[in-house]
Picture 1 (cartoon, rainbow, N blue to C red):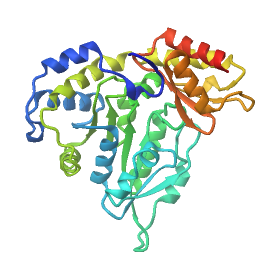
Picture 2: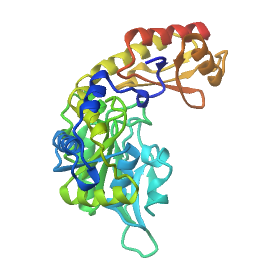
Picture 3: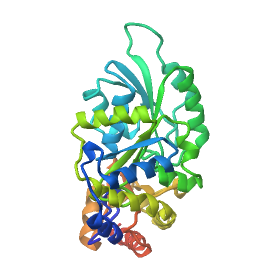
Picture 4: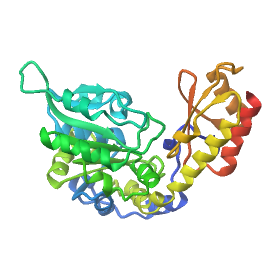
Length: 345
């Protein structure tokens, strides 16, 4: 990459192997179900996540929205975390486009809902209330340092959902980061949920796309919702070709990103002007804050970093920053960020 970009793993460029595969991809009309590369990608994602079928969609936001529209109807209610990506960062889509009422609840330090609060939030049969229909969950938890949530939590949510006839959807945008950190096969988590959306264009480096998986009836209905939202893509095999490499190869190297996140957290902990707890870093996200007596404001830090070293850093609000490691970040880039912050501050 031309700059050292820690703002997110969404900034990743496709790898040289992806570019070659995209150029050589066999294509067809995916809206007609005739693109062989898309079909291959959907089948691979479904297999890796232990579900019968998959659907290639343009983004993780679209995948989550399609899942909600498929599982629930207008007037229904979705229980989710108050820091969930679906609630905070997806433009209110489930409410605006689906007429689905979000019921946000607090989460703990790694993004888990309190199970008793979930049970209490499920509404009875009363015409004054929206109908509880859906639980939306997330792994890894982007609002909680990219924490990896273990499978027992999802097993307990599954039991609650089954007891109350609710559907359970997992926003797995960075699921492979979570399962890499937990040293688990993804199916250890996904077997507890009805549907999963995984992102190909973050740490997995594909230029575009996510895959939504679930049972065959769910995916058949999800395909209709994709069309409704304008998400039907034609010769999408050009994009799906990169997604195949993302799933086959890039999921196997995420430990490198996690190790570099640890390296960064350790380096930042040695700077007096930085407040950070390295022990909370599990995956590829490093959150840190300016100490109260720091000489610069957050916007000044970001501006000076870019001017000083060509380093881009994400501002997360208040005095907090987020740095995300990914395929295009190397050890020397991590060390350059620590050194630059040391000089600037």
